Image (cartoon, rainbow over all chains, first blue to last red):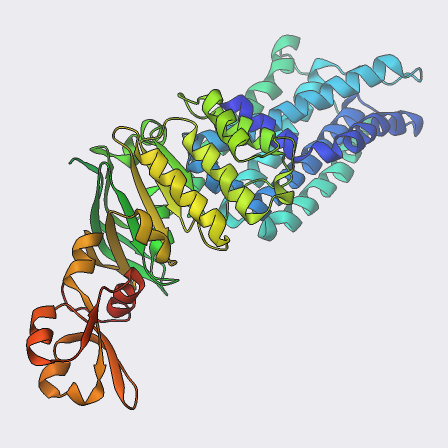
Length: 213
Length: 288
């Protein structure tokens, strides 16, 4: 059931898929070429993933708003609860796609794109979960039209701010390397991302269960 | 006959419009026509039954079980056709079918292909390119391919040409040949119901006006035509509605015997469903 709802989101965005893949390849190449610090692949991957999430999520949201297909789906055995869960799984699927595209690009393109380390992967997942953990319930509450500008501001601020914050931290030689085992440091962003994503999903389920379609 | 759907005390307040204590039941093996003018509350009632609009109060039982508590099980037993389709129009029919079909535990691909072939639909065609009639046929194919026991349709004939409407009525009659099947069919085009409906349910301003067997309603009412001179204070009371011109009148009555006795020379015809509907809408709350 969930798989087909996730597939639905990708079908809705299918006409932009080639364009999205090109951008997803171009962003890490650009980051590397412009010699911006990539922090273990973080900057290139984070911006790529953020861009993909934003573009695909916006495309699907516009289609949902326009066609109101969720109403039809709710007349079938798909429950509202399932639709919301599928939305979060779609987000995770997009993130994994971004990872696959980034990794292939890093291997194939001969210009030294940094391979993604697990901490950079987890940190990207955490920040993106925080952003969408806010955007998705807000959108369920107020609809896409009312929230799209908030999302755009949120995302583009993140694109500019996050790499610059990291760059500043590097320049100040501030390190988060404290006396915690490496494996725990690496896993911490995943645990937080999971927790935030779960809370956001529960919130979205509650909001959506009270909406008239 | 068993009650397949029971709605009791359904309330929904939108501020400018409300469903006011709507109660009715649908019997197994019947086509129930849900009639009323635009804005009477037909779509809101249907959306409440389907859980698309959240009720403020009341109970909706399908096959004896509260639908909100057994959503997945109940929705496996109903087929739904909505007036606006609500399809993702950028998808092809095949893509949309794949998503819908996956939700049903008893989806029957051979039945679906049978309908697609019968309706001459091409599954690789984009939904946005379908005519209104083709879209309706596609909706029907989706709604009937999982062996539903109850088919709920909201204004399915609105905007369709007479040929397609007739075809749709034939499909409904064919569907009803199956054991234990029922149809709940909202429309403001009442002529569609003349051919197929067993029971009529009239809603007006968010309230159920009547729920009766179609033949019973048509038999107990009469469309009376005659000379205006026959109307007086006494005879006017025999009519539920009256349209008068300078010389003649036309009115609907549910007191045919009294009309015959008191108004000799009038012509009493069998009314259409539309005559009945227009008689009872707009605040005329005389009980049948």
